[in-house]
Image (cartoon, rainbow, N blue to C red; front, top):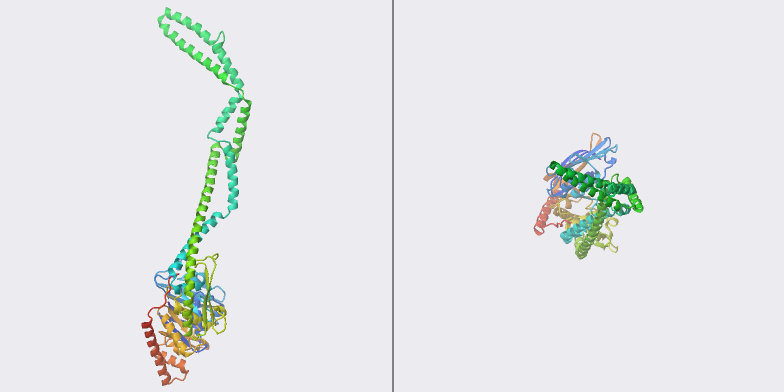
Length: 574
């Protein structure tokens, strides 16, 4: 509820400080006294755009401040937390500074904010229903919410919304995955080419060193073979080879051993030496025989080494780094396969969620169409009590499964024909400001627009009605005020008598300038104001008695209404 309002240098207002209470707050005054200026100031707090024309002449700035008190579970707190504007306690302070220089400022809980945030916040706290301010009613996107509130479709609508949120999340993941797909495909082609090139080389750690050794051996095959054969001949195969010389020397050593026993060990050692020479000589023979001159293999090794040098220049510079690059390519290509499998999984999830969404949306759509007829009948009944008995009210529901929103696949729009013989048309193209306010009142009487309390401001609600209907409007506003805080501007005493608090707006002259003053009427002042509204300025005991009777009947009607219908319509959260 709006708890406190301070206005400075705004239009014809010099300075006003007002405290408000829950319930039905009525604003009256002479025509042209400035009642709508109060509505305009509350509209600013709810997010209406400001203009320099609102600044009082002779001043550079105007200011409107308001304090709203909200219940702990009100959704406005969640919005404030998300935007970093939270505060302690249960009150929200909003300030609008309007400057002739155009540097307008918005403060929420003492922190600088934006019109966008204030508009979102204001829509949660207040609805202004006047000739130019039927925000909710003129927006077809809100009409489904009203219809769902009437049909108590909150649980089903929540399921639709949750599945829709999950579906959109999967689609966003798929969109991010597919974003830049052509670039990824080009990248994959490059990686596959590189991997094919590296796999053809059958790379192994140390391969370059092994090939270099093989190349060197192949290049020296002839020299190595000649050296090996020559060694074999010198050690073993020639007539005067090392082995034959050792045999001759061994014989002499054994003879020496017979002459000197101490030399027998030397002769035995010479035998070991002979065996070693023989073994080495035979190894050289076998080594020489194993060497083959393979020019083709030398060319092949040279080509492989050249290929290795090429990949090391591109991916190296060492073979180990080339192998590391190859491993990374394989990992990246495998990740693409994982992404492809992930995409397939998400596609299946998307298909499942879409199927569930369409099933639930279809069920909700059928329920809405079933509710619409009774809803229209109830609204027409309320309108008949508000001097719009000839009106035809309809809900146009269209379903398109290709248009998916959090409210399902339906779109709905309220249509009305205030005059007999005319086809129902959208509210904004048919109803006048006063009629729109009464339609809003009728809808509020049938179903609550929100599951949480708000501040409702009705301007022009009594346009084009008579005293009897004004009394009905007043009673309905009083009933609404049991749930929401209600402000109403009216000229009808039959409506005004139902208020719980009466504010009077008066325009006068102070120090040569027009000023507007607002005061809260006490019981006696309220009787006099109702009498003035009934008979003009000529107050008599009869008009005062009539005013008291209006108040007595209003109190009795409100009490009877509370006993007969203690429960106001409350919508399920949707």
